[in-house]
Length: 332
Image 1 (cartoon, rainbow, N blue to C red):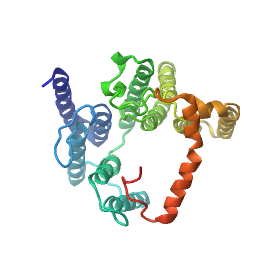
Image 2: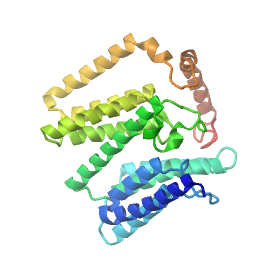
Image 3: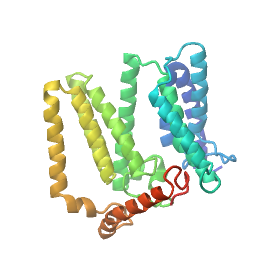
Image 4: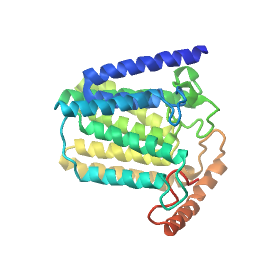
């Protein structure tokens, strides 16, 4: 076995062991974080065991353990027993519809790609959501959650800077800079290899950091402020407009909730006005700036002009099959 693969195996075994300890000592919430962090940092591109029909990865093992833990915790009354609500019904209905779509209802028969997308992109996140609902959220647990997401956001930001500057020594996992995965290369795509997915993580982590900031004293706030700015810089380096808007909107909402009621309207109105001014004065630059290393500014502008055409195609597809569409995992 090559040296790198040996290191990865050792890291994977260690992650599983530490994940088990977190499950026992830290409870369900720690288990959810363990699945999230291992899924991002020790995911399929870095290490997997090729087992048919579904390859085995560290996060998938911990996910199964997490669900088993939830069952045991509920049986012994250690979990927070919450009734099945309207949001859960909507999520369950969505899972049923997506499952039928992946199996090929109303289109061609199901295939491995569709089932894989169903399991890894929808069922696994739904399972983590279900597990997180069972966690008992004490004030200490909330602070631990916010601190963990803040540290994770700082890691993502440093990785984004390393990507942009081609500083391989601070980029982990190393496949982030590998030309083997050329799509979005150079755009702070992070361990998920997607600037949009990385942007979602930046938004969640920056919001957590801002909530943690409100709980700290003067020196704590002074220390955390550069970390939040670092995350915003990482989000900018995704060079993705939807990420900028999403992170900005999320932080604005968190800031509004943490601001005295008398100042909320002023804060929201000022933020919206600033966004409108930026869009009005920088519209051409926002459409044509260079993003991917292999994509010129002119090609970027052409990509933006294709959006209405793609929207028209999507609308016509909806008209053809309004209920089931073309099937999960089959478009493109």
